[in-house]
Length: 99
Image (cartoon, rainbow, N blue to C red; front, side, top):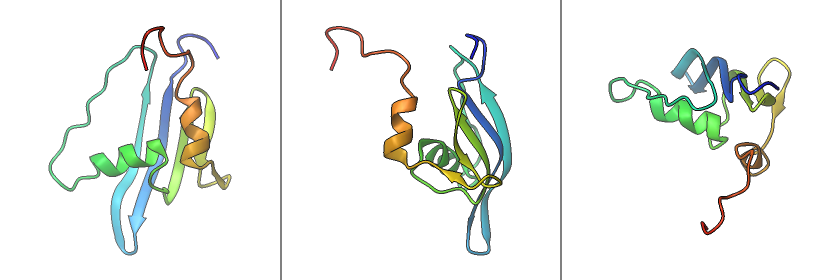
């Protein structure tokens, strides 16, 4: 992966709770060093989207890649648990003196 490759890729993310669609085909990429804010009214799916990326919520469909590694794909039936996916977030060790 090149240094300019997206660190977080979300494609057509869907999260449903029964008949309620909380997130409906959300897509975005976040590159190295980029800061992103999700804006919207209460109940529009911001937290649910972030919980899906973090592996705390199981999406219904779509794809999530962290540092080029697919951690969720509805089409390919990939769902790496949060505790396994979490180590992929960090690509460098904790700076010295920090805990």
